[in-house]
Amino acid sequence: MSPRLLVQMLWPLAAATTLWAQHTLVRTDGTQLHGQVKRVAPDRIEMQVTSGVAKGPGAVPCADVLCLVDGALKVHTRPCGEPLAAIAQGGAACNALVRTDQQVLKGTIVRWDDDRLTIRTAAGDVNVPRSELAGVLSPGLVEFTLPADRLKGLLADAAVVGAINDATRCPAAPEKPAEVRFSEKWIAPRFERTVSESGRAELDFAYFKEVALEKTRRLSGYIAQITNKELSAIVKDKAVEQAIGLFEKPDNLVHVSNVATGTAKVHPVVKYLSTHLRYLKYDAVTIDWADIRYVSDLELQPDGSYTAVISLQQRFQGMVDGQVYYSDITDKNIQIKLRTYEKVVEGRTERLWDVFLGDIGVVSTMAE
Image (cartoon, rainbow, N blue to C red; front, side):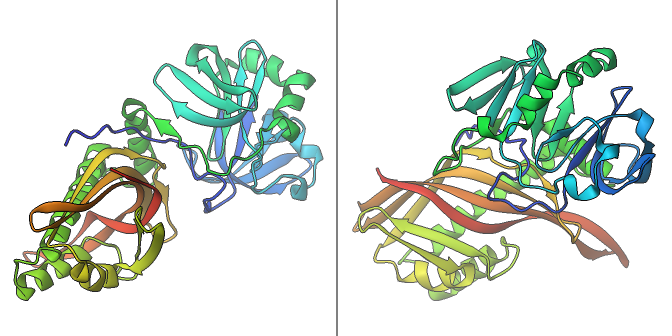
């Protein structure tokens, strides 16, 4: 298998839950602070900064504030004159791309490439070269790239700020959220910067990617053993035990579907492995993964772990008497959990990192 790895750099979209309100404060010198506003005073803005070298509580004098972007991606050019309640904590209507020619595009950013971004607007998809971008506003990722003097002029333009804040320009929400992709070349440095800022400098993107993919491949191997009618119950029990060990917890959920019957079911992973798979009507099952890609950024959780979601295409074949009895191709999302565990090595307790599988969901299924 030769998986194509593409990474989404958007933080959770509308269906996801963020851990805190993401605010971005832009100072008059063009530097930007990301975190959560705690208090708006007449002379300063106090916030808890969550990234960068200035992490922790801090205050910025109002004279040094160029603008504040709140959790709904609304730009406040005079935030010190507003009550804290007016600074939204979340609920972004849609993303925005601001071009250097002061044009504002509203919609969903669906592709982040090394040289351009693609935004899905009400009029269709628009490609914007990175060289023509002045600002990007999306949940968890707000950046302005102009020099300070040009940025001041941009944000002083009421028409530009009004267009950014105009939710009526957002396209209607689609029934199925658009899949967002990021090039791996672009995501890897951001991944490493994120974990470094959180004090996890020993982690790197290559490790996370390699282990996550290896665990999905091992799961396929265990499923093949569990469903093989020629293997003994002892071998199958061992395969069930090893497969459960790949998951974060035994009550993670596995969604399954059948294109022939049109049915879809959900099983706790223990039941899925020990009961559902063992009583399939096939003599053997093969599962292959292809087109593997990352469809969420790495998110820090309250317990110090990280989660991400990978999307992949699963090819399922059920064999009877050596012939393919049933087959389908299913697009699935698998939650990946990166967390620490303790291990005693030569009398010393060491904290190590490992990757675990989480819930497995079905996106779509089609006959092969």
